[in-house]
Image (cartoon, rainbow, N blue to C red; front, top):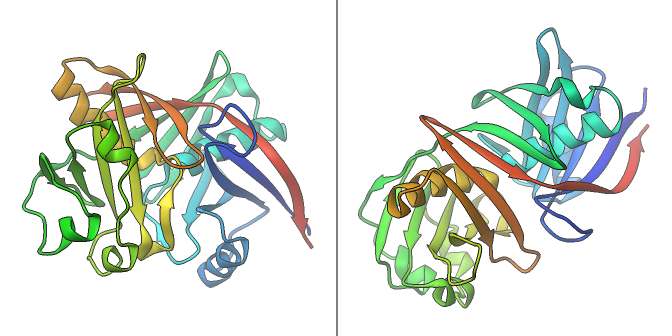
Length: 262
């Protein structure tokens, strides 16, 4: 049976912006080696494998190099694909069983809201060489179960950063989040995300990074509702709401390509 594929730009309001993910709508479980091989073949930041289950859908995410523990833009793309293909009515919302627990998605006035676990970072000393590899001077450094997060002085420092990706790949972490308070009107904070160790030199718009950044900036700014911009070349806007130990991220999505595997 053919497998339907949708190439979705997530956290995007126009084609070729936001973060691309290929959603693979499966008719049943597939071996991990097969999913990883297909993710490498597709060579996108995330390949998202979706299988119907008794209580919703099972979802697994893969970069070209590794299975991912949490992928926000892949979750958003999966919900978009299920609604667009009428596998799920938009009014019903979506429920996903994943490596990071049960996640959900809801349609809200043209935006997709995904409910994810907060990934709070604790203050940490950077490993020797990390800041040199980034080429940055840090105001603050933290660590959660996935990544290091490095706060810089301002938006310009984040925007102009040119890290040594080869050196960053040597550190035992999924990735490095770089962030600062925004200078732009209507935006609370900005970020970039580098994950060469898992095959993503710089990610375009990283949902899981905002599970860390939203609690961090909520505490810094004294508000639970924030708007963020990721300063990658493609760029994207993320709305975030911190709710106890959960983070609700909202973004837009559109399908730019459709295909199938026979």
